[in-house]
View 1 (cartoon, rainbow, N blue to C red):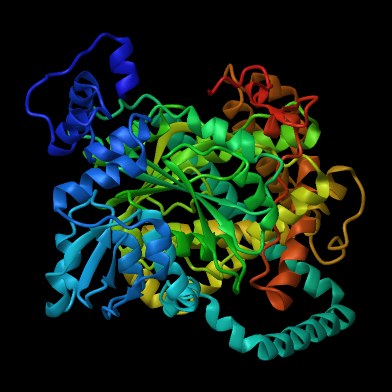
View 2 (view 1 turned 180 degrees about the vertical axis):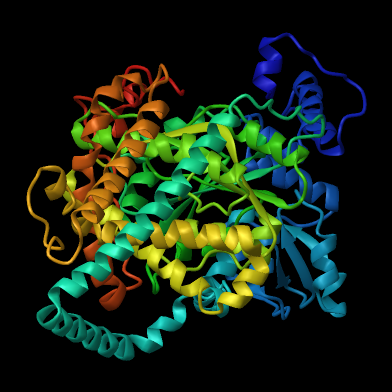
Length: 640
């Protein structure tokens, strides 16, 4: 609850014991004593400083707060221009530490060192890291954004390179850059060998492919059935009791790239979050070369708790590299990820923060439920919604209950910042950095838990856009498996047998099933009474058994899909569940595209197109702007 809500509720707060900053502002007429007392009341519920509360509530301007801090420290105040032209003293620290603290050592006109910061945070931890001759430098007060901009400009190349190589090389695929020629030669030899075998032994090759497709089908169906049963058994569990400790600060990274269509709607959606704004630190992560999105955001009056961070252009141009760079600008102890088109539940951050407060330390990540706000747009959107509902509402909760490691979704995931930094952030070269991070967490002894909060986003509702998105996911799955299987024995020792074999079952079967889908579809010939290519070498009973197995797996999928979408919110999708079989061929196309890119363009980020539906971007007004009140148009999706 913020000051405005306390004021509307008639809560006056206790007039005694005001913070020195509050007393200064009251004495100079910048703040009423009643609002200062309410701010103190808010501070007792929130783990933050008074100036952040006043700034987030719009009760004080940054210049007034900086001036008050300067008076408190008996120090000078520098504006952004003065910070930009001041002489910097090299402190010998990792520039990411300076970014994290929003501080920089400058030389004043008399040649003395001065520690520039915004006065809001205690810099004792930073002083302990500084050389002895700089640790005692007197403070000067400067805007945090100006200090961070100076650090980012000075160490531009260093920070850019660090973002690309933040994860350890052992758990990254970036070494593949040096192996492109060898990879191409090996691929060509493999293709020649496969073509030769197919020409000489066509039936034998088909039989081997059918055998592997059958094995992975059984594994996939078994994993799916076990997760389904576990999820059904877990639905009545009681949520943990809420914590009474002050709420923590939470940073939200929102990577944006060519998102001009939905930038306005994004700001409107995030503004509806009910988490105290003084504890929210929303960072809009922009690419340097994306001037369109930067110019669009420049026209929007962003709230004080939302700010852009521009990532220097570099390679690979991927979402994880951008997030690695932006991580050190974060101020929260919890880091969350949202996508440009996301519409999170208003109370989502509160639920996440309270769960982390009651959870053991090994619970490092919370994954929310993803859903779509345009499921009625067309058939593809309906099928995509059925697939997402099954994955996030049934299969992932079931896998968690089975004690398996979870491949994270790319959004609505929240991580303890200390753990994220311990792991080296994200692998900047992996195009499914989310799934990869889920297994890196498991390798280092941490757990991920599903949390019952929903984020609605836009279903990809155009076939080729869907294929491009899915091919990136599948390429990332292949990359993740290859990276973590470099040393299988070490992986087994780190993850334990249950998680290790769960990792194999999920990744190997998921990729094999889409690549070998045409082989499995051939069993429809038997069910239709037509001859099968393997008929001359397999007895009829064996072929019938294989066809029955294929049909059983299809029926299991239909049953799980139907059970998942039988709720009030998704029941309108039930008639479309049988058509999911015709949705599968798109994944097969995406899989072959993924294999091609794995060889020739392993780090290429095939960006998902956003803003394809009216529900994603709002209705356009006659003046060219957007009617943000209409950003959610689908009935039954009142998440906001």
